[in-house]
Image (cartoon, helix red, strand yellow):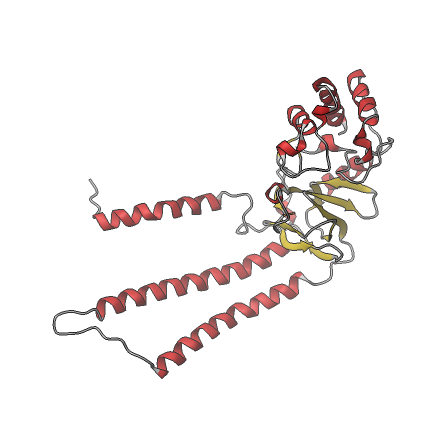
Length: 342
Ligand code: CUA
């Protein structure tokens, strides 16, 4: 049996939570250590330099502290003493931090310059508007407006024009780009090119990264990086106007939806619903989540959401709780209709 001394055992136990944390960080889909775009590569480069330097400083300071404590501790025949002032030491420990900060500053300034260059001419442009608490995305020149889930092509630049409708939000997709703030009355731009091999069926997860009120943590979004062919197909499908109800049930849901107050806030292209306060629902059935990424987009979640949005996402006051105005059957009928809008 392996015999481990008690102090070592205690140290191992103390380190366990740290190891667990490190393991969790490695498997986190919102990691900055697995960059999938030119922007994220640049950020990762600086991150690596800072991490390595910080590790060297940590080890050096810890080692010096231990060595000095052991070598100079008080023992029979020698008294411990305090010393004041040592010009040589002062100079050394001023020069070392200045050198470290300089080594960090050079790649940092270079990264800032690289990531704020103007976007290439052939970049796709998406206007992003932050709302409490969801993201609105408008593909310029296509008439395509969507919410909380976007598709972009691999290997081609996409430029995001960042705006806000209310308070400061922030755009952050750790594996792709950010964070850059969405500021009321001011437009920021952020652009990046996902790697050619970044296309995959699973989304890259994004999150509002600036505290913006009660449901800040519930303000998420998803970026799907597609092959150029899949991206074109998606754009085409999303540009389609009204999707005619396929059966009586969804036809009834549509009638109910169009005769309710839903139309005052939401748009469904090709119908009388043309509101612009809430997310565009023209193709909501094709999204994987609702409520800015906090609930799966299925019948049960839609019913829960329409019944009482504030219960699902605290602070949602613009959308009323329809459970006080409609029966559960009526709400379910609207949910079926929305799911049919593929
Ligand atoms: Cu929007 Cu935090």
